[in-house]
Image: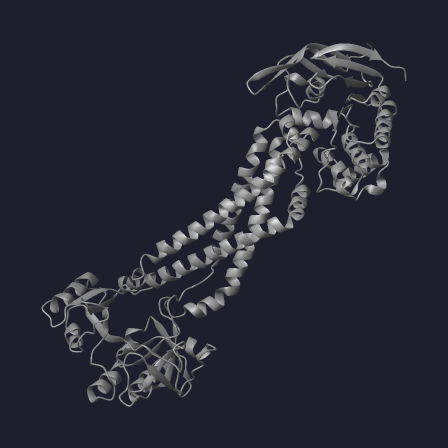
Length: 231
Length: 405
């Protein structure tokens, strides 16, 4: 592995639901290189989304450590994590998670409010991000005026607006038809190949997984397969 | 960190009906609050403005039992008494019962001397104005037993519009005339109140005119005085004068009860229960019910936006940002409602002053009252927003994201 950009060392994570403890990750070791495009696959409950949440600083592990670039995410306090997330990670969710009361442009501008950019600069950068996903002409549309594919492209634009190094995508094509899913996957591939974004994508879709450079198969919290793919 | 206030504004605009109704509810509550506080303050101001050197002597049996006219001369002899006048409720109306205003029969030769600090004579019959008006009215009041002095509100008000020199017929409801006709009074002077407790819609007529009419059979009623107003010397303790008056009549024929003018004024307030407390309780109850309604509205909004909080946290905003947004929204809703309520109170102030002219002289939506109402509105919004936004502070980003919007 040339460059350990993201590392999970001996990570364990359990959840307690209804008095029952469920071990989701069991002493997992994982390294991801800078600029990699990794697809995480596996059955439900195998720990895929938990890995995304740990890498993205949305959740904390019970034991072990999570490093992203030079930061030990697992050692950060709850108050430190939001600022770190805003600088280093962009999220793309299965159900898009755009704010319905804002236009596409305003949704993309939202994370830029955490930067020192002026209002004009934020608008310019958000417009640029929308241009990257090919939705300049939909900037003033609300999410309910967009198709599912367009909504997910706006969500991608929002994820890259602050120019984070890592993009975390949780089943980004799960709610899309094949054509829209292909568009989204194409954009993610471009972000990886042209802009060098490190992408961590959970998917059940084999077509989507084929776009990744590396596919990791998880089962019951354990890494059962690690496969590099040809570009 | 910049707060995404635009998001708050968009949320407010996205739920126009719900937020509009909440604003309406707050505006009504704040209007009621302003109204009730102004009523209570107006009543209290009336009591506060009472003279500290004036007593009121009434029958110990009841306020509605007249005192003998012979008492006045005896009261005048008591050490510490400066001046006395009869005050008798006349209770007639102009043309129709709804055109009621207060009339008191007083001693024409004493009344103005007694009320030098209470009312200002602004115009006398014949057109005399300024400092000379008082003397001119004094003279005119003495020269015609039908003479009457009216408050400026009876001249300027749309309902009456009485002018100097006008003969005003008043239909009796207590003291009918033997011939069945109305009493007639000639307006000889116009006063402006200098004290909050004195309405500007009162008519003062001559007590001797009434008593003579009763004596001669011209009208049905008996000679007497409702109460005696007693101005005391500043050098003598007012309590002592009151005790001396009551002691003088302890053995009849009519026992008296002498109290300060402030106590007399507060008697009318307490006659219908502890009105300030009653009104305060109503105001408090209205405010509390609206408060819970606003909190409920904001909490519904908060529950619907837990997922949004998760999204914002994923984007890098801290959990308190979502809470702040709800507080901001609560503030806007409550201040808007409060502002409308205050405007409503201001818009109705003039009409309510006219309606309350007889009873609450000093009904006023004052600047401190407006600031109080605005402050309560703001507090309402902050507490409601905070109550709705606290769950955001407790939930983790993953929990928030999992919640349905």
